Image: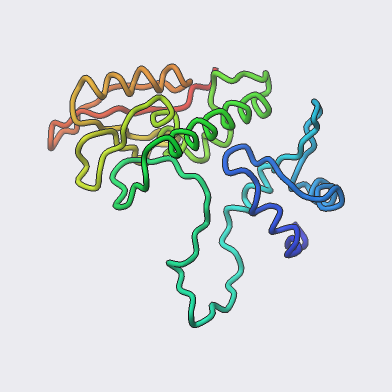
Length: 213
């Protein structure tokens, strides 16, 4: 990319829906992003605009540093971006109907992203975004199915962690029954899983990878 997006274009990119990358902006702003390869116009009505992979990379890149007023600290800034719970978060946030709606909306958005970006339009198989965000994608599939993430002490639910293996995450749970339920959920969501035992601790865990076909 020869030039960085303008400030106005960056705001449109940053305000895109977290999972689907659906954009909101003026026709001129959207057309400019399409011209630069950062967005595309969906061929089916209502012809919404969505971020391309290049646009997603722009959004996920750290913004240029700006001066922070003395009365504002980084902790004051709330991005408002949805994040699936991977387990073990120190501050998991509020549960209840509002969180359930957020998770449901994010999962439906991910299914739509699959339909739009998988070559055959399949929604039962992970898409490119999931392959580059393995931990978040697996956690969203689990949370959307009603599984509870582990607390800060790693007890009480699932935990999803990155692994050295390409396109694989590790999923742990407090007991074999919960682990089997997580495996069934991930397989239904288009992942392939295998159960393993950690040699040192003898703890059971899953290795999960997005299915390709």
